[in-house]
Length: 431
Image (cartoon, rainbow, N blue to C red):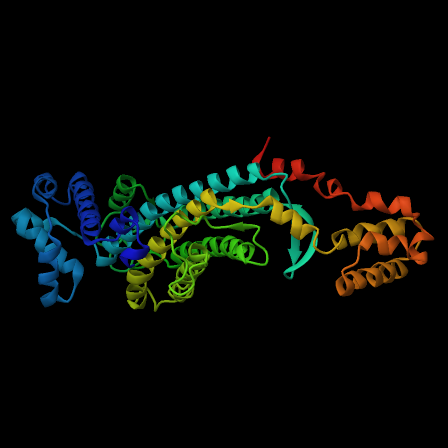
């Protein structure tokens, strides 16, 4: 979580002021519920709201002695509330505050990330519609395969982010839970009504069985979801990096006036943003395994998960927020070169139509084995000699025995490969 890769709104969620503000709200709402139940005086709950105040620097000072952050917080709170502070935290344990606060913070972070994904999707949709019929070569294993459109490429990434948005909505729901249940989650010293009240006020659901903490499978699912989203970021980033290679140059990052690509070579236009996104995605995914390992804690709770979450929660959310924001900008300003796409599509002399020729031969009576051999034999000559695939096929007696020369040319029609583009776009974007 360094300033270079942080945006203020997300970083603010993880600063001390926000954390202590949430702690204070949890304690104050709990006091309200306790007062309603008659456990503490109503005046005590009112005092917490009226005089409740904490200072991060003072809490840090107290913690240097107590070695316990929640106790330091409560001590600082008592310095402002006064005598009524003895009624604060009645029947609660530290994790009631810590875990409920973390749930609020992850919910806040999720809302920002969902907005980020929406911006990425909006940019992808706009560019996909713009290039719906822009022909380009589809590649498998990095090798020319068959024609597709650049719009279809982008629509596929849009659909992936739509799935990821739904996953994050579910992960947000699962992690946004409240536990105010006491030392081992039995409500021995606090009424479940307190938990229900705090949950409602903080916009959370109640944790059915919380031991001393909220079960960490919820958090593991959350961080795993962030990891999957990071994978989507990287997949699109790598696609653009490949397309920007000099030998391909079908698309590239926007290169701003005055921008420099290399300290040594003035001609360079490097894909620095998408390379950066690839690296940031690794940082987000780095949180997944520790989050999974946090699930298995000793008995009702140990503290081994705490240090992990204090690092991965801000790091993963701040980094992914930055990455998604950067990706939206990359897609929005991406330079696309249809002429280069067409040149690359034509580069292998029509080999991209090999499957259609294969199918036409089998439909004309040739065995699949013989048809494959005949098509491949001519295709290899194109690879080796740079000849015209159509011309070679027309001169091949084995081929023309089943397909007359004038029947071969229509098999090289680009429109054949784009006839279902509208169907794909309706599936992705709707009518």
